[in-house]
Image (cartoon, rainbow over all chains, first blue to last red; front, side):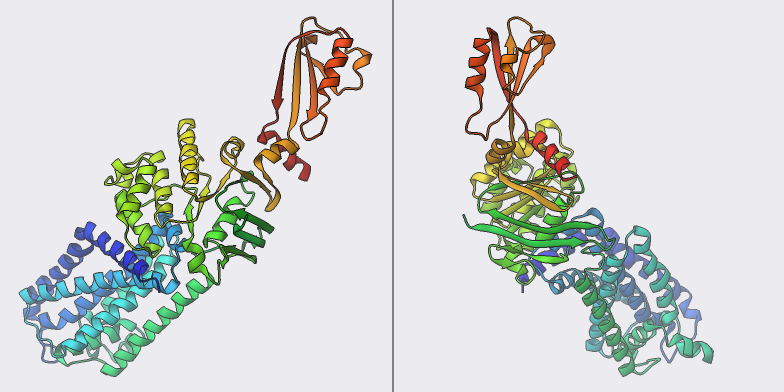
Length: 253
Length: 308
């Protein structure tokens, strides 16, 4: 195991975040805070409680999860796409490191970034709404699991994309709608029965439901189902990454 | 001498069906400067890319100091430094950061003294805190060399080190290679500039259409294939060559003022003595003479032509 190489990639990527702090930290935190102000404090007071939770507080886990997904995907995608785009990836490929070490370095850094952003958002939310966290350990576990899973997805997108448009395509056209329709702003129980069934095909539903459970003990689907679905998604992403390195897809002709 | 790099039966066919390498065998000796010479598209970069792990081989094997590049890739790659053809560098980090990154990537413990020496050898020391994006093309090329040297490799690959570089920088780069060679690093460079191989290499390999046509000591190659030309400048012009000189391979040129004699440097006898004797007997006097050796370029062109 080339631990020094993992550390080098990880620190290099974290340093990139430090250099671009406005774009990579402040901007996602600010836009989430705007949601808290508008939906939490302003409109939220006029909306009924959901499952006994004030609306402002209800949307906090969903918003955190939404930002976490977006940030994980775009951070990890950009992290590996950029070296491919400018050509510096030659150095990574010619170095004495295994595929797993490369993934740990890049995905680890991207997941850490989203985790930091997620925690900052949580702290920010405190200023606008009253929140309680019933299961803090589970909350953290969900945060980490989601960051890692979606950073893996981002890594895959960063390898697959061969232009900047494709790089943006999946986060904007797939992840954003799934996150919005995954119950960030509502309980899926509020939907007509047919749409409730359709919604169950959206993987984000399980993430948000499980995450909200760790806050308020309320969930749309059973917590075990949430956890298993997240793991299934993680395993799928790992399998794709494994396939990428085994075949050299888009990396080695 | 013990080869440090051994390529055997290496073939590469790209997905497009293009066969870039055909059964290439090559052994590189420790400490030498080897020039891989060939026209664009001959397979130079593919060969290097396979050895460095950027491209998967279709068949054959490569070992670096006894380590197979696939089975024992960590040991093999650790010995190699690669300077790519394109100026691919990060833009927003400093020279020092980028070479530290390279060293870490290869799993080497921090060693600021060594990195300082590398930068000084490449005249980059005063630029160590400069952002790479602010450097000129020549400086960026040096940064790439510094990155490749950051992990103390035994073998350095320079893929077209002077492509698109002006004449002055090219001489500069040759000087850098000479300094590197003195440190004991084995250097393999690709080029399509013949003068570059002629200037720097100990041995030359010629590659064309994915095949190594020839590998030879540079001096030996020049001697073996190098035709020499002796030009005699005459006092009085001749209308035609006298019959007594028919035994020699001569040409009359320069409006009758020049006699050109072609000979092989390889032969035991060059025939110069008897030619001069016969010229004297024929009463032909000359005021000057010069010899010219064919350059690698001419050798190369004739080799490639022969294959067609």
